[in-house]
Image (cartoon, rainbow, N blue to C red; front, side, top):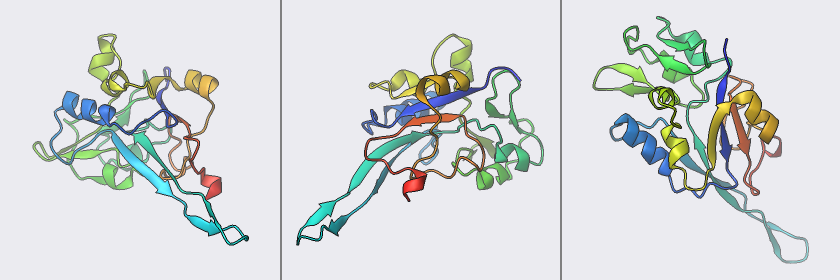
Length: 197
């Protein structure tokens, strides 16, 4: 296989503006309810007695932008009965061949990130393809280009991991052991890691 591409998400910079989500939706002409990239708020914590009659605050809230993670072990491709959902050899991006897709939805049911989405108009599955058409023209994916704070980057996952580390687990996401996502996250300072749960 060629160079595996992936995403870097800097949750410490993300303001939750959803420019990435909107630009992806606009670029792909997605109707209401279908999202290839989702920005969600992760929150938790509370107030605990401090032992001196007062309370300690450990409340947190932050946003996390997630799309398909073009996993190294994508369950969606394993569960597709027609091989319509497949991983490209040249860049490791998981795509749908709509000519082979029968719209059964097995890929959506099995993806822990909710990446595959039904295109009701054609009765076939659809998902983030890391803006293959834009990349072929030498442009960045829509979500990367739209982020005003540069909180989303993409590129060879080995380079992203060398630069930013290998954290890809955070509260609000499934365990990375399930599919081995090609994702690196810089956690928000208030974030809980999986070990913190």
